[in-house]
Length: 429
Image (cartoon, rainbow, N blue to C red; front, side):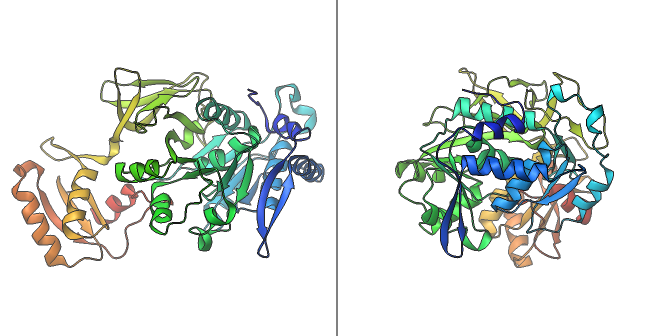
């Protein structure tokens, strides 16, 4: 199994492949582009880049965006990937911070000089950071995934997730390109619950909210054999329903900083038990936090010192290993608030219980004046007060919720549905 080192090497391999690299919709009809055709288009586009410079690419699901992305990186341009469906002022500000590429005569082309790819972190517990990834780290991630869950020429992977996020970039596109699968480019948000039946994938990478929606609308195609879930926890009920339908369910664990892949399911009867990917040195620190050293590691955060080779990254996730060496994740370290008397409260547990009691999903626990406070939106205040009163009766004083706050609107979330705790805490505390 080939492990590619650069995008140039990867795209060169397309020339000798058979089969389609891309299928996509155009005017209500499915069109295709073969691997040799995609390689030719990328290298032609790269040849038109005579003066490499940093650029923003709106990562929509079109052949043109994909061709431009690979051509720019191969030509030495650093690329900021932006979601075309979101405000992207930040991306253009980042481009202004990037240095101009080295002149050709100053490059060490023997080292495979290519541009970087920059992604914004989701910013659930802190302000978003800009992560500098390389084609090498991304290709290493694709290879790690292939080592644990193989795709091939007989597979069609449906790309519905944002390519501006590393899970979508690697698992719905790069992984398939590296190992010869056909990539179906989704038609956008308006067609999310239609595209699986339209494109008939065999592999579907998803976030939990998306797979739940597809199941609710009975929108999974009979050809589907694998669902790869990432970015957030998925309920056992959802997993059981997919398994009952004959679909293998894999959970993938990774971060933007690690180019996605760190660990993945191998035992299908226990998909939440994750095996480390090749080269991923995962460790549980004294406080329960997961740390990792991996060949897929980022170059560093923009504006900060570069990471040293072999450096460990503190993930912010809590976890443990079982007797088989499988990783079990238990939550985010920063999902824990510590009250003034030192009591630790795991926010998602409170939020889940109170959401069930009130019927309201728009709830978030924050720290205010040394105590736990509940922020809510879209539910009658008396109902929240009654639910919290009942909830508090079963808690020690130090564990109780002391304040109720009505939010001004829906709580801020990432594109994968996670609460942006930092923003909520900053606004309402």
